[in-house]
Structures are given as C-alpha cells and as structure tokens.
Length: 476
Image 1 (cartoon, rainbow, N blue to C red):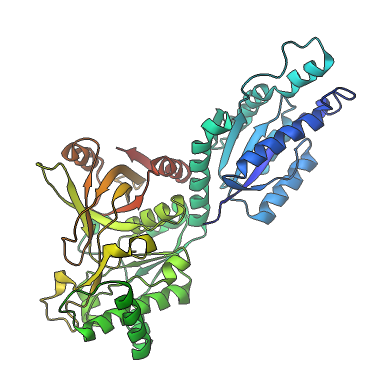
Image 2 (cartoon, one colour):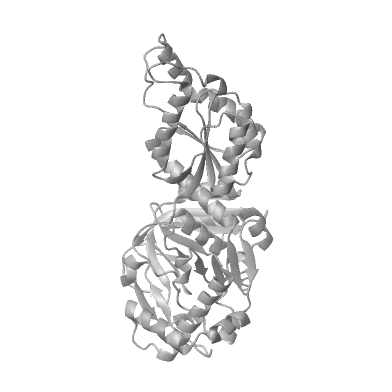
C-alpha cells in the first residue's frame, strides 16, 4: 500500500530571517532550510511528504493550506523551527481543516553544534535551534483553539515508531471518512448486541452506509453464468486442495454466489461488504451462504465480512488500513484449554484466505454447520483456512450503554497446527498471561463475540485511531 500523504508545516521566525548574513553557516533562512531538508529526507522513509516551504507569514500559511487541500494530505506534521511570532501559527491552525489529524513533532538533536555563543555565527545558531521555545508558545494556540494534537519530541530514530503509527492511524481515519459500506440486508437479529447506530457510524466514524436486499444478491447471482462460475471453481481447485466428497454442483453454486458478492462490491464501489449470512432468509433466498473471497476485495483494498455485524466489519476495515493492507480474519473465541493455556478462535463464512504466502493453509471443505439442513444447496463448500502462525493483533469495535464506541484490543500468538474445525477459519492462540484472566477483563468492558485479527502488533496504531475518532480505548 502507498505511504500516508503528510503535509509539513514548519513555522519560521520572520524577524530572524536576515540574521547570520555573512557568517560561516549562512543566514537563519539558509540554516533552517538545511535543517528542514534533513528532516524531510528522514520522513520520506515513512511518508509521502508534501512541503510548501517554511511558513513565515499569513500568505505563506494560506499557500500551504491550499497546497495541502489540493494534494489531499491525510495528516499534517507541524514544528516551530525556533522561537517565532505566534500569530502566523495561530492563523494557520484556525484555518486548518478540523478533521485533519495533526501531529506536532519537534526533532531533538544529539548535541548543540557550538560550545558557547561568543561568536556571532554561534549566537545565530543558538537562536535557530530554539524550537522548544516556539513549541511552548505554540501549544497555547492549540489548547485555546481546542485542537486535538499528538505531540512527539525526540530524535527521529526514537520517534519513528510513534510517527509511523500516527501516520497509519491518520490514513485510516481519512479513508474511513470517505468509505462506502454495504450491509446485506440488515442487522443480525439473532445477535442484537451487535447492533450499532448507522447514523453514528456516519457522523462519528465516517463511512456512508447503504443496505442491499437478498433479492438484489439473488439477482446478481443469477447473472453469473455457468461458464463464469466454472472458471472460478477451476481457479480455486487449482490453487487449493479440495476435500473428498465435495459435490461439484454445490461447489459451482457456492462459487456463483461468491462472484455475486464481487459484482455487488464492484457495482456499488464498496469498501466493505458486510453480509448477514446466518439468517433463515439467506438460505431460503439463495439456498446457501457464499463461501469464497473473490479477488476484487483485496484488489480494491476492501473487505468482506460475515454475520451482519457492522462493528466487526468496521474493526476489520481499520485493521486492514493500519496494518498497511494485510489480510484480516474474522474470529470469535470458542473456548479455553486450561491444560495448554490456549484459546481457540475462528469463524465460518467468507474469509480472506487469499494471502499468497499461506496458500498451504487453505482447503476447500463443506459448510459443516448447515450440511444436514434441507436448504437447496445445504453444505455448499467454503474455503477452510488455518490462520497462519505468528503474533496477531485482535480487535473489537462496538457501542456501549452511552452509545460511545469502544475499541478493545490485545495481542496473541497464533500457533501452528492442523486444520481442526471443519469449514471454519480458525487457529489456537496463546497470550502472554492467563487467557481466563484476559477474557474476564474483556467481559467487564462489555463486548460481543466478534473480533478481527491481523498479523503483527498494531495496538499503538489502534490507540491513535481511537483518539482520532473519539472512541473509548481498552488495550489488554
């Protein structure tokens, strides 16, 4: 995935501009521009940098703001280059889009490049290095204007993990504000604790939400030709082992219905398609629940989730964004084994099993949960996925009693092992402490059973997302 597009607002001192003329290290302007270029060179490792030049005046501020708007920056990084008149900063801050994430980063130097300031050249350098003075006076403006600002003061090597995490969260926040989610056909009435306010999703988190009927999905399914469905079956069979006893007709119909989900995503340009695939109506209408994850979702940085849980779908979308586009899985914890200390988690339904590095973790298996029902295509196959081993961040999103959103997360190690839970994306997980104590604390917060899991530790990124979105945040 592309880097976060970051606008850089360096605030310089108008009255210092000509200081240092004729000195060995040049004027204040020349010194601070060299410093800025050094910062930008480091920042280019982790961000796509948009730099309008040092901001000295209101006209400079206007030009910077216009450039940021034109370039659609996803966050702004600001810094005072020295002490400075603070009106320009206050002016810039007042006009900056209130929804644009803002981080104040003051780079810290290993040592000052002078022993004392008897020489004019060194005295000018002393003034030029006074970013802390500017930062302190600048903080008054963001406090009085009630701007949400993340503050980082450190050398780049030490600050880099926090900057990267903030940039990832800022990008996720901006993408959420422009996202389009689709719910088919509506909330999951057999798990009402998963209900969340769709208007609050739009106003507090960002995505536009549309609802689509099972009849719409049936129409799209019927538009998938036998040839298209057969081609998809052949692709799946070539890529993954097929368990014995899979009925070719059921395989074809599961592929056809899965391609209908792809058609819906493409037709509506959805960033998330959240499918209620456990209602009686879907089986009465389609005869099955779709079991595969068409390539169009990953190709468009979108996600497909089961069980009509909008909160879990939002958590999955956030994890995909903050992880840099990694494959995310939908899980619910099943049980804890006291003897081994592990807990098992997973879920049936369409899953992102498409990571090319873990094709050997996928098999085509029956939908064991509904195989013995009387629905038209009962038992139509799924991609059976063993979640790869390694550290995972596991996250949950829902609403609390005061209608505030809560984001809950922890890390756990996914353990290697065989396919066990037929038709379920699953794994065994181990946490650093006692799994029972972990879930005691999670239950005290009040959640639902649905979580999303992604490779790596992105809990700091999630903390920043929670701050930017105004969520309650719980990390265990």
